[in-house]
Length: 152
Picture: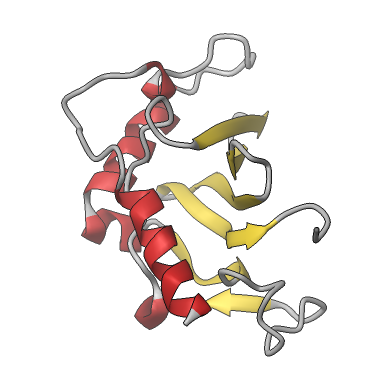
């Protein structure tokens, strides 16, 4: 039962804020990063709007961890986990001004960006890593929604 509720929770998170016509500051590249992220933000918005584009811009199989990995005893965190195309759930845009989640984009270089999305409570989060490859920007690593920090 918990898994079913958790899946609905995750889908709800990604479905919120799907108003593409309403610009927000969360869709604007930060100016203090030292890098021009305009091209990345254009890609990022298209990635979340177009399912075919999204599937074409993920390095398959995609390394990472599944949702609720810490709660699922069948997941061995010491072994490498790979997401497969047939198990993928489309990522939808999140309006970070209206949702209970916040995003931190950390440009490592012009071609590599780390993204952390965490619930404002600090108890749940996900990680994505983006790289600019020969065919443009791609999702290269994804840790699904998991509990972060210590168990209470």
